[in-house]
Image (cartoon, rainbow, N blue to C red; front, side):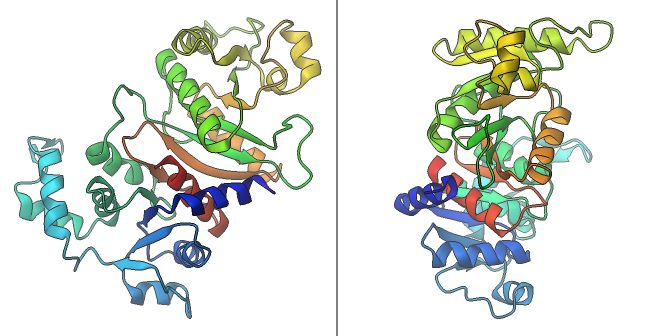
Amino acid sequence: MSFVNELLDKAKAANKTIVLCEGEDKRVVEAAAKIVKDGIAKIILLGTEEEAKKAVPGVDLSGVKIVDPATSADADRYAEILFKAREGKINKKTNQPEYADVAAAKAYIQKDRTMFGALILKAGDADGFVSGACHSTANTLRPGLQVIKTAPGISTVSSSFIMVAPEGGNPYIKEGVSLFADCAINIEPDAQQLADIAVATADTAKKIAGIEPRVAMLSFSTKGSGNDDKYFKSVPKVQEATELAKKAAPDLAIDGEFQFDAAVAPEVGQLKAPGSAVAGHANVFVFPNINAGNIGYKICQRMGGWMAIGPVCQGFAKPLNDLSRGCNVDDIVATVAVTALQA
């Protein structure tokens, strides 16, 4: 059985309710219909039936709960939650309170489906949230940061992509699945944030991907072979992050800094980092910044034929996930399944 099929079967058994915020998007509507038909999860789709059927004429949305924020009977309850969560917060542009009262909060959420979806999750009326097919990562994650907030003890919200090998597998990734992080949220993480990303992604590897993580901290340098002190000091940052992650999770197989070939290819790892338990055998790859991570996963996806599931968000108090705007229906279905397993 393929990794994706196993993922979907686990989600079916979990029987969770996931809110999809973009009922105007053709891909999201098609995914909602498929998810419910196949029993992968229960779906709350934000929008109107007219919008959905305009996006996908003839679509069968039997079993999909369609909620229009503009007319929802729950809008008052959700507005109260938002107002209390943001009470005292000042809008930096206007220097006025974000929401003057509950009525102002209600007017806002009736127009902003992403925030409405986050409030459904906050209220406990859904187990997870997925958006981003036609909204930016910032617009998707902002409601999460404002009302869902981070899990206890977590200071860094991050993301990872679960990368699934194409048919025929890959000679370097025996499990057929690996994780890339952070490719979507933290633009230029410092050493502590990189360490947090490494530990969180290893946890996702275990709990969602079902693999034993071997974490490589990536760089253009392997064990001091390169240096950029004159410019950005990125190599020392990755070295420090590696040590911080080892202290935070002493039982975790983690090492670095590694060039990608030294991390994934046994013959290169043995040559460049002899004695390392991770070099040449990594299956979790932590990039030094979002430039490297985002470029790397898209090269793997588009030129290598790997499926990219995610970004899977890590660190929120409740499961909230962002889609790539280049996603297809299968990507959305897989992300919903991951979200169900996080709940």
